[in-house]
Image 1 (tube, each protein chain N blue to C red):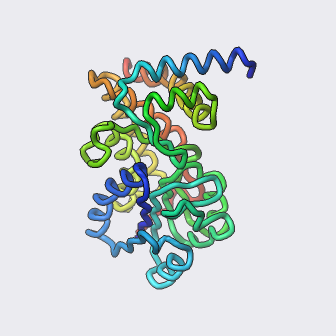
Image 2: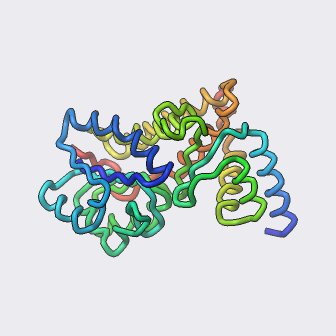
Length: 209
Length: 73
């Protein structure tokens, strides 16, 4: 498994923090290659892929319809280099990238590409900006996305992992609808926004094992 | 969409945002981070962020009846 994590603003910092538990979980079963900081560039990633041949690539950061962005907000993989995902299951936890980059990756040999068709929203509480793991407003939003990786690690198919994320979202939605917490509405809105645009391209029965 | 429709949607979404506590923020991908009040400003300006926020809120309003009907069952 290869995890590529940017960390240069509040949103990427939240995703970074919440992906630590996924690395711990994955390391029980796989060798995990972490790509961070200045290593987030096409040359380094191609080299690591060639040497390690990961079945699963998990990206956390910003994206657009056609590319993924590094820590300097510059594109480092786009539709012209989407063959980088060849023979892998890829999950891009990034905005907008499923329709353009995802489709292009599949055309270039990616087994399955999971992502979002629109923006990835995170609702946050001001007080916890420096301690993301304590942010009870953001936690349910990001957990609905984390579950995809947790399911894939358990050898579930892409289709099963996505369904599990929808189920988790539905559970949180019901909990939040009846919550008396004033900020529950913010988590609720972000979960519904993300859940409506989560999807995949390519094989539904692909696994990472 | 007519100018009146846009103004109506802007008003609706701003009221919905105002109903939230002020200590909430939203991160919207590479658009960045916005407090409740900043989002209200973006909606008012009808910027790209504002349009995204309106779309998100309308999607939410459309989906809620279905979600609630499932809950009641």
